[in-house]
Image (cartoon, rainbow, N blue to C red; front, side):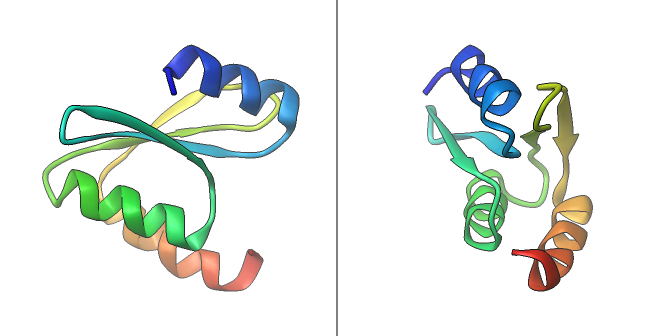
Length: 78
């Protein structure tokens, strides 16, 4: 799935999406605890993945440290 398609789904689908590169392949999933974990493991401690915000489709770069915070916060909201 390409980034333009993910941005469109986030803007009109009203859900946050995660987007990352996994061994040269682009991946995207709706934001969930499992998806955050998969993105973190695929990018590693030195890599980044993107959070595509719902309704605005703004990209936010997420590193390992922010990913850990998102993973902990996902216990309470999903």
